[in-house]
Amino acid sequence: MEITGAELVRGLALLGAGICMGIGAIGPGVGEGFAAGKACEAIGRKPEEAGLLTRTMLVGQAVSESTGIYSLVVALLLMFVVK
Amino acid sequence: MDEIGKISVWATDIGGLHLVFNRTTITMTLWVMGILILFAVLSSRNKGLIPNPLQVVAELFVGIFWGLTRDALEEDMAKTYFPLICTLFMFLLLCNLIGVVPFMDEPTKDLNTTLGLGLMGFFIAHYAGIRTKGLKKYVSEYFQPIFFMMPLNVIGELAKVVSISFRLFGNIMGGSIIILVVSHLVYSLLLPPFLYAFFGIFVGTVQAFVFTMLTLVYISVQVK
Image (tube, rainbow over all chains, first blue to last red):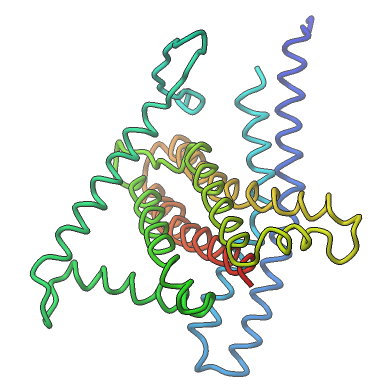
């Protein structure tokens, strides 16, 4: 069975997409979990500030997610634009 | 599944240039603008001490964002930039939520929308910085803390634009693709409403809030 050049490019692009998203998902997971842990700690210390702490945690996590989103965009580009 | 890569466009050739307009984005943005104008007109008529429901919603937006703007900027600058911040949040919130309605796409699914809004915030922040500090002090701040840091500071400013627009675009576009793929795998049984609730409503609201707050923070950093 002969593999043409175009099929090889497509296959490697899909492999790259998988690796890109897989490794890119490590960072935000660790970072956001750390932020959530600190927020839990702070709520344990002062439970009446829970609303403000939750809001701040969510905003911080949304900013920390952005590098994961960059690797998602690269993976989508590799999947849908490389023919 | 094969409608993921396709974008419906209007393509014209004017004066030797091949111009392409995204039809879905333009149509949806006009819908969002129309709904926002309707909301503004309906919520501000018959203003009284006992408010009608739309007036309550509008006062909620204005109250929350006036508090945030006043904490970040001083009083007169806050009055100047508050309409921008509040409108930005209401526009982005409606843009992200309109994707939950069937047969409607979010305008923020297109990089053009988010990049345009990011560039707008960037130019407004730097214009505010130049007007407040004067051109000389503004340029000298790029050479802090030592003068060969200038390229790094410039790249840092450009990276802010890229990050703010790609964050919103990636979250909304990625969310909609995940919804499409998972609904296709599950034959649209049971799971899609929960996906729409998380990716459409929750992520849409949080990302609209983050975009608005980051624009406010960039303006306040330049003005200090």
